[in-house]
Length: 84
Image (cartoon, rainbow, N blue to C red):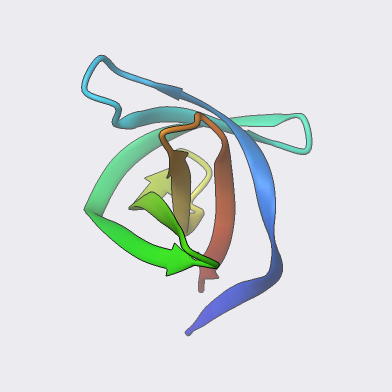
């Protein structure tokens, strides 16, 4: 079961040179990403503007499994789903 957040939560994320997340910080709590299960990209039209998001399903060193995404071409990261 997964919980989709009502409003995506902004994160601070560090990435490697390929853009794969290495750490995330949420409410001042920094966690190391220990596994990337999958990644995908979604491109949508929103009021005539193209939105592109790069999604990752990750597991952290504290056992949290979640889906995060980065708005592209920007650099903002968001948490939008937490898995049980």
